[in-house]
Image 1 (cartoon, rainbow, N blue to C red):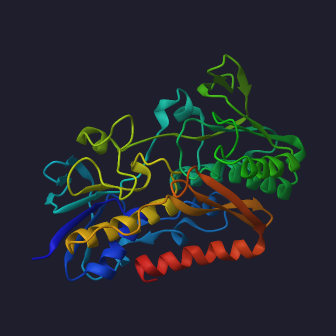
Image 2: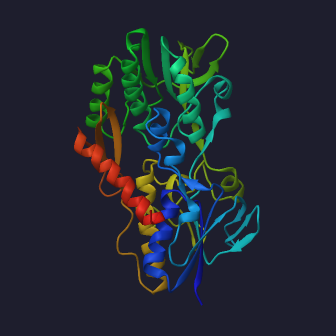
Image 3: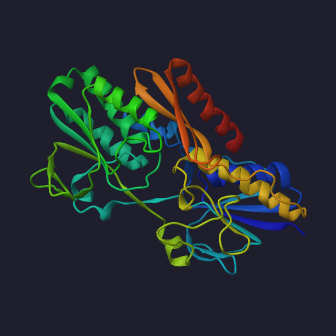
Length: 377
């Protein structure tokens, strides 16, 4: 009888795991893939929406189009997870899994920073990118403050991509001289694991007259006076505040007892949790890697290999290295690529390749390959 694998979450991790299990174990497992949404979008698609490069409808990939052997997608919201029994209850029913993979990602806690919900903007969600897109045309002078409100957060280059692309946007509109762009965050440098990549980003910001303010935590927004109050006691004025929201595990994961100290602890070699036959991968996991889709995808490959090895009485041959490449938009059609490896050596490494127009093409191919692999479109 086929083993039942239940995958919670159809982001990079869930989609890649479903695809790999379909490719390699379709005769041995049946997969139920659950997600509360009806569609997937790449993280970088939020920038396409924000700057009007693509319509929202053109960046959404519908889950109903998934056609992988042995994989059934169901649009349902998980309401409880019992990791000991591997039982998942949703708003439509319940599932008993032989193997459970939790890939629900990280949620945005907009309320964690007082004033942010009322007076801030964000582009980490489709709705947030649409809202900011509609507000930007009315901004023609003043200070744009991009605040990184907590750590860890998805896609470490994204706040800086936003700043560089906002620069381009304002230049195109002829109002850049009347605007100030500043990025403020709790990190000492844009990419703390490597001085070289951080310096490249800082150089790009400096060339465009954008300041990075390090080691500062935004405690709250004073929306009446348009000031970001910092934990240090200082205040930063703004006319437009764009925040990278505080991230947290979804509430259903918190209630399940899976999370410890904010995230789900996992064995770094194979992403297994302390509960037998339960894995956690991607942004929800507490592995010491960046929270980004490529690392979730790489984790899915290891989880699929581990499941296959265990079903066939073998052992995992290739442990998780936390390796992946993140693209970063530099503006003007130029794209760089950060090649990172968090667990494959004595210490994390990262280097920046580019930016170049060739990498802009590589980024397009990256999306097209995964669209074809996961959705067949």
